[in-house]
Length: 137
Length: 399
Image (cartoon, rainbow over all chains, first blue to last red; front, side):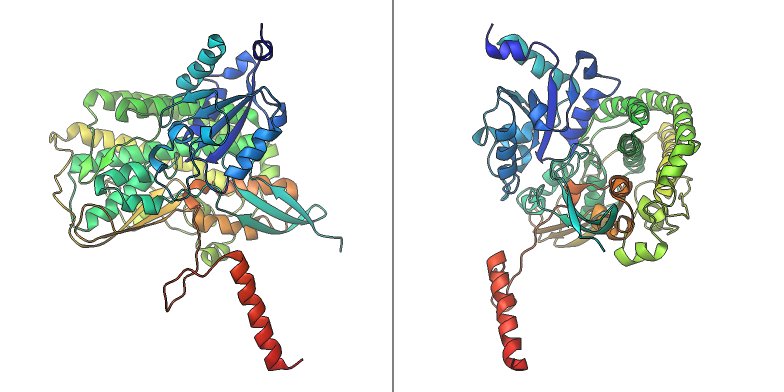
């Protein structure tokens, strides 16, 4: 059993970082926590500081102004951390790829472990993405 | 007087969904001033719109804000259709109103839930979001997507609502209304919420006029404005409904307006469903060949207030200028009246009370030289300008 397996076997704590999103993925992430999907039954919950987190959920395109903050937050995170790109925007730039304020896809800024495409991805897709990652290792 | 302390709120705060940054200047517990720093979420949408065709712009403006993802296409459709003067089919009008009002219900429920969460009432958060789920499922049935519905197009809508779907929607609303009664009762009769929200973050009608605030924020202070009634579009002048107004102007009044507006939305949807069933004409779209040169203005009442779109066409297939003003742009500056003078612990709910949407509002400012058209502003240059002015004044005053 590798180090990563040991850390990610039990309840995952999530930190949500909106780089420059349209709110859609953010409310769908919150939706995962509310009664219908209820990931809290697996011990997953949103935490207030990235220093407590096992998973970093990034939504939205990385804008020129947030790029510095994204790097800062990634540096603060305890390693190993799973970085999840939620939605089309952090994966590729999506509809905003031609924007003058676009600072590149998320994997050009920080290393990404899981890509969840969709605009916005359904809560089921987000859960499936994380489960796939945990099973794959 | 003690020393003023700065309490930063954001940009990545556990309470906030979006990156936004407030500086609260405090004297002890009391907030003396508030400064808002913007630009984290700026995506240059107006510029992107100029590179897309008129049809494609719908899918861009939909992604200005995920919560108001019908309001922006609504205003844009009104703007573009006003250039050639297209009259959309009756059936499309009703379908547009249904989608718009369903969105209002889901957005207000979302707000009630988040406000409950800010106050430490996580039960309200969970309840409101649970009741929101059937509405989102209904969106998926009608439009094919939970958010970002891609329902509108120039001259009508892209999908019809069949009688079967209309019946399903009717059933969802019938199930939803008793739950709404329960939620409204839980919020309005709670003595703790009365004590917590009344006389907090009060905005008078004068403040609303000063800042030009719109939507539920204005209506909670007794200002009677609603674009759906004042400048009717879609099917809002064909159905019977009321504008909800409260007088107090505090956070409680804003919650009251939003909760009662959901009943009106349900009323509008029910009437639209009946009209759809009676209407035998299947036409949901008129063909618009091209957009002639000219300018169009479109307004729509989003859950947060008036959305304004301006579109300029030169007869080509994409807009040459697209200007957007979202409701939060005028509502957010009211924080200077609602938060200042209150305690830090009230700042979170005062800022949340206008239901601010930062991704709608983000923009950039640049200063251009009027004579040459060259960009002259950056921070260092502005400081240079400022210092030059001081030097000039010094010469004049001869100190």
